[in-house]
Image (cartoon, helix red, strand yellow):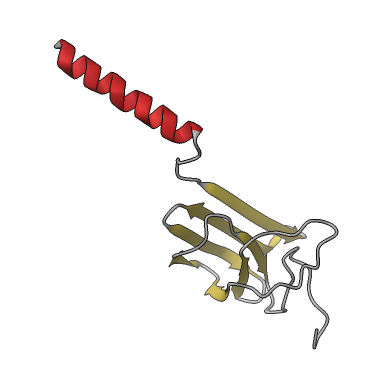
Length: 128
């Protein structure tokens, strides 16, 4: 390998490291939620969040759909968590869906019913 090419590779590696250290790397998070009763799946969901959006995979739901609520951020214990959801969606069991144009940080809640939830993923009282 010639010296110029070697220097180019070192420069690219240094730039990638600097971007990562400054928080410029692309976040990738995944969440899996699964609950069973007597060996039968009540809910089985996987969500993958990347810099370009999110992939929702509803593997199973006792109601036939996974109901997702997306919030701009989670809540601390003392916060009022009744902030409106950025988006709600229902994905049929056995299928998946992609969503783009989400904020860098997003809180995801998933349920088997379509009850409204707060940013802590707790069901809100009807009419709240």
